[in-house]
Length: 464
Image (cartoon, one colour):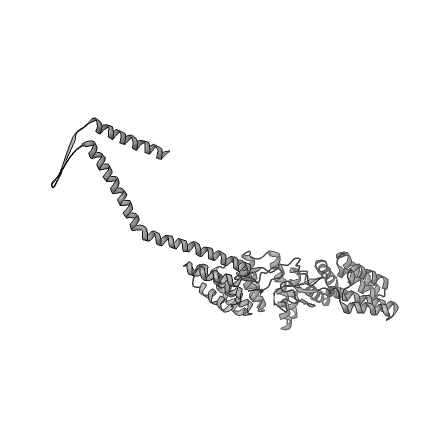
């Protein structure tokens, strides 16, 4: 609208000027050297306008010619930039697709076309990792430390490499550098806590866990479970150092923080029983059984009533069945008590209700047959089934690497993941009720599991 009004005003001005000149005719004489020009005012005005327009067009043409080299250079740079970003995008896609040769080719092309080292270094490092060239990847990650934009990401890549190669001390040093750069980053805080725990530095790990929780990088329930495991390890150290009272205090603290750790509950109950607190020991084991039934808890529960008759203990174990009626461990515990009391039918009924012919159940059924009918074919048949072991017995399984073991420890025997071992009915199934599955750190060509606490975290780089 504004342009239309402006155009109308200009046309009106030109028409007004033309009418003004037409109403006032006259002549003009121009003398220059030996030249003389006689013309009218209207022709002079028209000629002047034409000369002005020609001069304007000439000025525009000269300006464009003057700027042509710079425009061509800028256009070439923009075209290279577009092609470089296209190569960068294609390189990232090749990394995601697991094509190392394509990723490396696009990385080289992006490096030639783009004068932006932060972007091309990252792609080059990812391509090198995808090809398995850890030395080249380390050089690229180290070069990224010189760029402010990529220094933190370079540290992350070096941390993953250090973890993969088992250099925990180097990884911890790099994590401290990353923590100085970004003290609130969740994975940095979690990784630092995990590495300190793996090193057995329980006091420092406890302080790191408190900082991690303060920064809200971990859920309160997960931090609570970790504190329980830390207290258990400190109790072991106190016991080894000849401080039984301190060990008892720490194990009580661990039990109050987490009831699902069978070794902690059994140790705490044994301490209470040694002090003459039989009722408190029974309550502690029942709390632990309700949280997570385990054979060690059943053994400790039976130990409380060792002075009672076998029939009386059967009635005691019925309490465990009331607490966890759907858990096979309740049936197995009651069946073992019935077997000792020579209640063959009762023991067989509970084992059948437990479900599944695991080696442990098969061995108990063999005991029942041998006790009731003697060492005959039926007992040997159950022993044969136990030897075949078609279904595995429950065991502790690592939440990170899947390693199975009969005994619990704070660190996985294989991957040394902290607070990762969970008692499972089927050790091969990596389910983690109440526990945190390890988070993944996406750096370079693959994934590496880093220490994300929460009941069970680990630092086990898998594919970088």
